[in-house]
Image (cartoon, rainbow, N blue to C red; front, top):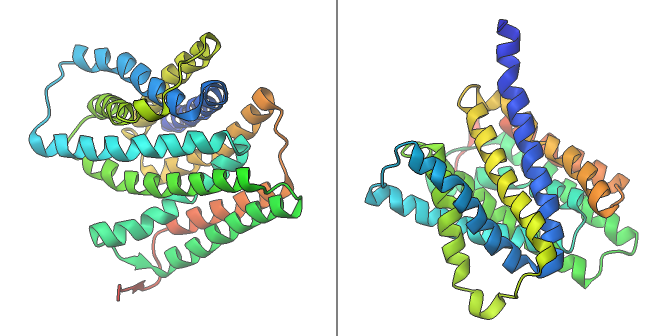
Length: 296
């Protein structure tokens, strides 16, 4: 294979992985609208575990140590509620807007890394956060200006922001996990523990699933595994800085799938707000050129 084609392959696989996960979001929105966000999220977790665990076992799985178990449990708890709040938000917001607002998670992660890992916050990160915040105001303000921001949508935005905070903390845990466990092990315990955590809420939130929700749930489970493995494969073969831009293709995918699945129109405030958020993420990802701001 020519060198340039070899270099482009991880980028293409990462792009496909983001597409798989965006399509998964569309199927999950469909399922959540049919049977509720909780039931759909719980079943997706167990379907994902059932699909990935046999692959992990077939590749010579070993049970993790106590310290690794702790990381798996922490991420399982965090990701369980991260997914539940995100998929609930999808039932209240257009798919593209939800994806756009979720892009603030990397910016939140910068500040969590300072608090939890002692990393230094650069001046660029402060400016990036300002752009990200401005972007969210543009998106939400566009809805208010159109008279479409009711209590139902406000609940969706609040749920989305909570999911973004949990996703940001999820970044921190993933960074720790990746140093002590492989992608298949991480994916297996991520889905399995997440499902067990959500199962504790079944007496309060469970609703019997309808037959027409089975197909989108199975599709969502398979796409979750395909997307996660594709991204893990790509990031193992190329630098993260080269692949980060593929994450923002999720907005394009979401816009396409939102229209195809739900006939959701794309608005100019959403486009403008997304541009500001992505610009903030790009600014934060650049190598620091100015002195860092020490924590007080």
